[in-house]
Image 1: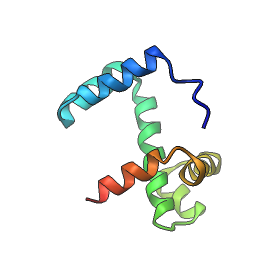
Image 2: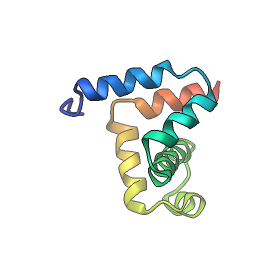
Image 3: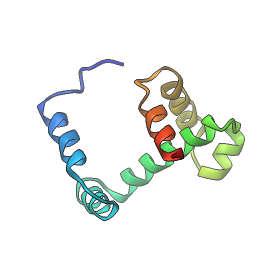
Image 4: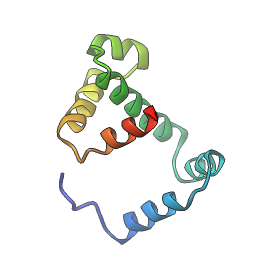
Length: 95
């Protein structure tokens, strides 16, 4: 993936997230930095990635998550050809 989006501001954001120490702090930060819709969209994409990784079909994923086929397709593309962020998180969530 292109690195064009990485700059001083995104570096600050990433470092800020790494400073959070527990679930409650993450919830507080997310609530302040993003809209509820944005947070839910991120959560939906992660669930789509999890279901794709487990072998669910597009119709099954759409029914379970409410995600559009365009969203499912986009997540699948990044799951297969992205920077492995989904893979890292999905593996760590299994532990």
